[in-house]
Length: 289
Image (cartoon, rainbow, N blue to C red; front, side):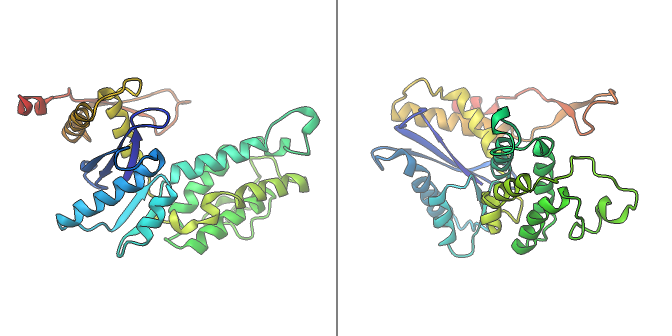
């Protein structure tokens, strides 16, 4: 998985492009791209990705699946690369759908029934859950994923003919919808347009493996400790701080924990857990002396 982090917030001089292994979550390569290589900061991620591919190829490391945050230039580069499957981050795709559905689920009183509908107000999170479930149960079939997304509107219209056979709405004769049933044709049309306009619906083949870039986003947060975006660093200082971030990350990612805290509150989210991690060892600092 790869991602780019710009050194500044706008028109950055420096960009860090990093590649992490899917299983180890450790940094495999980290490239520093500057405006001396390409004057356009928006093209830095594509250039850095190309250099990473060349470096890994020189080390005889093959890339089977490449996940990233849907940079279109990187998409094209990966698709043109033989034997590598291109995948985009699912979380960002679902977030975009939630934003689109939220926009049509609330608004001013005068625009009700025109640009939004009250019947869609309770469906933002359930639709996000449905999309996540659909991607993970599509059996890596883009057509099956698209059919499942098409069925979202039918499900909320209380039409369960095409719902999954394991769903309660299919086998429970006493099933009653927990959400407001869509009876307004305008609301149904708005929801249908929001879903069919989404990236995951238009390009389902880029999401069928349900990949995410959570770890590489976390790495970027670690880099913020060493590189403040409010400060302009020289090239040498920028590289030094990037290397320190890589050493810190590789030493501590997925480190052990001493205990796990679980809430006994019956109303708490069932999956909520809090791990008490082991202290940071900072062994890499001893090697730099």
